[in-house]
Amino acid sequence: MRFRDGRRVCYAAGMTRMGLVWMSVLGVLTASAAWAEAPPSDAGAPRQDTAASAEAKDVATGPVELRPSGHRFTAGLAQVAYSSFFRSASDPFAFEAAWSWLARPNLLSAEVGAGLRVAPGRQGVSLPLEVFARARFVAEVGPWLPAVGPELGVSGLARLSPRSDRLPYDLDNEEAKRLSPFYAGIDAAPLRFGFGHFVLSALEIGLGAALGPPGGAVRTRITLLQVGYAP
Image (tube, rainbow, N blue to C red):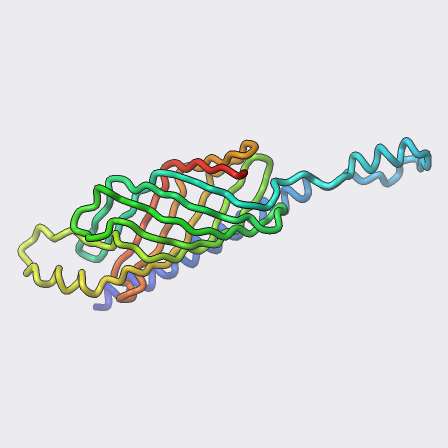
């Protein structure tokens, strides 16, 4: 019992630490981008009041053109896995489709969205799909668009494989009944890039846990490849 409680405490601490690290990284990237876009200081330069010089200065210090706010539609290929103390289960592949809205575009923007994942190869579940909603902070450093934020959802993929040992199988059934389909986690997209209207992302990572019983199962999700389009 003490060992299992220790696992829960370590897992919660690890999730919190990962979230803080990603938020710190986004803060540093945002500050660096703002510093890079700041106009050079003209202290010590001779004063020029001509109309031509004023117009040139306005052009040089004009607003930074960022991607407009609006809808994003994405599709990708992911893998979802659940693990408990004794058992684990994962999907061969899950197809993901999502919608998102980028609000107040800036060097650090907010993005909210929702979507679903379908795993036709999932065995032992009656409805092999999950629905999720998430909110992420998005930093824009040139074409690089890293994002991080929380994700909540309800999953029909919450299942654990039977054990191969000699313990009674009724324990597996009891654990499966207690495993909640609701989950919460942190989503991170470190390799996300924008090219015009298109967004390409690879190796997005989601770490979380089933909401019941507390500490009963850890959830991991890796989105191998994702392609998005912004009209």
